[in-house]
Image (cartoon, rainbow, N blue to C red):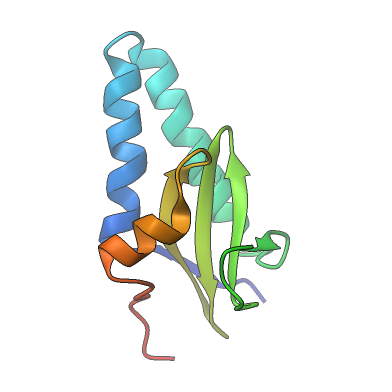
Length: 109
């Protein structure tokens, strides 16, 4: 059974920012980056457990896949995959999460 894939507002703002930056030099590559990111997220509807557990957290329901140099971080629930973060792989995830207030997937499951 396919799961629903939902982006949190905060998570979607990051690939949009990256695409805006890329578009300064190439609108074509910016659009390709957005398509690749969306396709990766959509693939989680059927392959939700393909990502690895996020090493910084001890929670098997928080996983990640890579899109180029970016970490697409998601939270698994029984019916929905919530994309909760999209950050460059060189950034310190633990510090970022503490500054942003931690994991808050919007779910009622």
